[in-house]
Structure formats: C-alpha cells, structure tokens
Figure 1 (cartoon, rainbow, N blue to C red):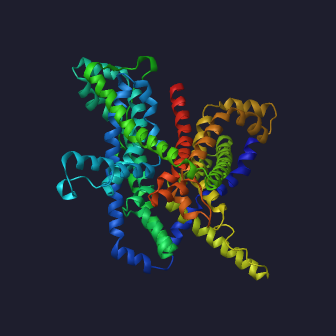
Figure 2 (figure 1 turned 180 degrees about the horizontal axis):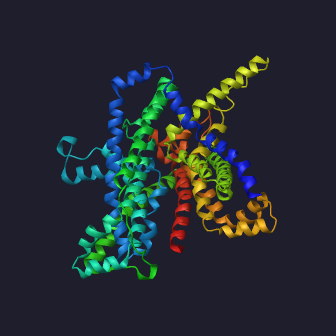
Figure 3 (figure 1 turned 135 degrees about the vertical axis):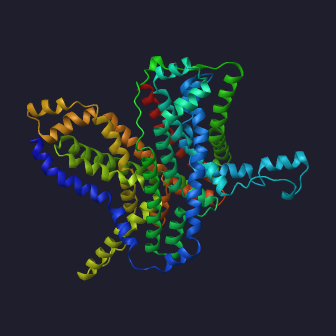
Length: 542
C-alpha cells in the first residue's frame, strides 16, 4: 500500500517542486530574451561599479562579522566569566533587528549633525569639517559595519556550537604539550571549527548580497539596488532578469568556492559531552575584559538601537497609533499566517513522500523546493513577476477571445503574488523543520502501522502529524517571522496601495522619519525575538 502511494505521489511531488523552482527557470529564460538596449547601457556605464561594490561589501561584511563573532563564541564556549550564561543567548538578539533600522539609528548618532560630532566640536572647539576627520557614515564601509553588527550572530552561533562540541581529550593533549589557551585556540580549536565558520561566512555573504534596504539608505549602488532601479526606473523586465542572473552566479560561485576550499577537509573527533566541557576560568582583569567585550557587542548591536526605537515610539506614540498602523499590521499578519500554513503543507507533502518512497530519486523534490531560500528577495521577485505577468496576459487574452471583460492583473497585481513569492522563498524553512522532526520517528512505527491496517492517509494524519507537531509548530513560527520581516520582495511585488509593516517602516527610514514608524519597527523586532528564544531553548535542551 505504501509502495502504491509512493508511485502515485512521486509525480505529484515532482510537479510541486517544479512549481516552486518555476521562478528560477523563468528568470533564466527571461534573461535570454530580446531587448538588449537597457542592459547594454548599464554594462557600458554603471554595471562594473555595481558588481565591484557588491563583492567589496560582501567581503567587508564577512570579515567584520568574523572578527566580531569569533572572540565572543570562544569566550562563551570555552571560558567561565560573569554574565556568560546570559551572553550565551543574548548575543543572538541582533538577528531580530532590521539592518536598515540600525543604519538609521547610527546615522542619526554619528552624522555631522549628530550628538557625537556635535559633542566633539564643542569639546575641542572645532568649527568646520576641515578642522577634524570623522569617518563618513553613509559609505560602503558604514553599510558593511551596520550589516556586520546585525549578521555576526550567524557565525557566532555556528562557531559557539563547534567550539563546544570539540573533543576535550584533544584540548587536554594540547595542555600537556605546553600550549597556552591562546595557542590552543589558534592551532587547534580554530582550524577544527573551520567548516562551521565557512558555513556561517557563506550565510552572511548571501544575506549581504540579498540586502536592499541598508545599501539603498546609504546610497551604495549594488546589484540588489540595480535590479530594483532597472525595473522601476527603466521598466525593463529583461534587463532586471539579466542583472538577477548575475546575482545568482555570484551566490552560486561563492557557495561553490566555499565547498571547494574544504573538499578534502575531514575531521574526526569524539564529541564533547555537556558535563565534560573543557573551560578556562577567567578572573580579575581577564574576566572583566571578557564581560566588557560581550556587553559592548550586545549594547552596540542591539540594546542601543532598540532603546532609541523605544524612545522614538514613546515620543511619537500619538502619531504612530493610528488606523494605518493597524491596517498594515493586519496585512502583515494575514499574509504571514497564510504563507506559514502553505509552507508547512508543502513541507509535510514532500517529506511524507520522501519518507515512504523506496526510490532514492524522490529525495530530489524536497531539495529542489528548498532552492528558493537561496534566492535574494529582489531576484525572487523578478523571477515571480515573469511567469505571473505572462499568465495575466494569457487570462486577459482568453477573456477577450470569448468576448468577456478583461479581468486585469488578477495575479501579478494582487496580494496573490506576494503569497506565492513568500511561499517559494520560505518553503525551505518548513521543509527543514519537518525533516528534522522526521529523523526522530523510527521507521518501525511505519511498519507497525501498515501491519495494523492503516491506510497511507491514516499513517500521515494519525501517526506522523501528532509526532511531528513540534517540527510543524517550529516551521509555522519561523516562516511567520520571516514573512513579517521580508522587505525586498514585498517592495517589488506589493499591489498598488498595499503596505505591510516592513514596507511601512522602510518608507519612514527613506524619508528620514523613522520616529513616526518606530512603533511598527518595535513590533517587527519583538516578533523576531520569538524564534530566537525558541532556538536558544532548543539548543539548551539538545
């Protein structure tokens, strides 16, 4: 019976996976369509600058994130000092803060008219910018710093886990051979953590490549802003598709280089048990320095921007607490809920087929369906626009052929396209969450269920889903949060007159009026804290 289900559903799973990779296929096809004038103009003028800035920004952000994350990860994983348990989870909080909000806050603090430079001019009696030098905040370096502050927890989390799982016996052997803690870190722990660091660096680089709001606010031209400008200013979908294809090549090349660099690296070690973790007890100045570093990192990356947001929201509460706030909150809420349910259903369907199918080829649909998460939001938006626009044209032509009134852009001009784009982008999260839960279900339960006469549908509904409830809940939660925060795809695909919290806040940031959108920004941040708390609890229970 299970085999029969596998044969029937195998085609359905491949069909579903192909629908989810349709934007990527459509994007590549559109990139080879006629219409070279706009792209040729960009190639002759600004495209080299876009590519140079994108690569330089990724390099700077990765280097900055690594330099911030590794000391914190080593201290939390291998040392005992005051506040260590709090910093273990608190250093994940910057992930909940949108980078463009952090960029706005620090621009207000560090710009020429900001309190810091005003104070310096008052103290040292400086009168004009010629009297002193201060780094330009609105620059590629400033954008890299803002992104590094928000994205370093990716590397911190993976590095901390890698350090904690390293074999205690190897550390003891290094001590016996006379290695100091610094030499042990540099010669042993850091090389062994290289795979985790490489994965974290790749994640940071891809998030940097996908960022639109921060580089747009700082007026740094990158490939992401180029895609947006090409579509809205030139109206050329083909040129935007070509630029999106270049971004894809950059992302795939980056991931390929990372895997190639560690293709021959193999590490075999006994995983450290929780009770036998090797650690250094820091006292005196060293303990103070460790606590001070972690605290400064937390304050700069999260607490200070968040407190300023709270102050803005308090001062401008009467202006922010209005009908638009509730309308856009409702838009974010219902879009996120619908997409969460769709993604979990996709994950359940694909992983159930993968679970019961005896064919190894049926692992491919779930992997294909997960490729959307690797696409930057602007790239995904262009990829979704291409097929849905063509479908809208076909629907209108068909209506005209039968003498009916043309319905207009029923797909690409409504919230439907947002739901489709978000589902394609975030299905990978639900698939991964359900996959991890499936690994904890013994195959013998499937055999016992079949022996007892359960149908495949009953196996899924009565056995698997109750056992998968934690994975389903985690998938729903994580997809919901990502939908609330997603900005680039929403900016490109939102229907006329439709706003959600992310686009609402970004409009105030672009207009230098974040004070009016601070309340909405706080909602996004607080909602983003939920999965971080859930993640930390999961790590503590692991």
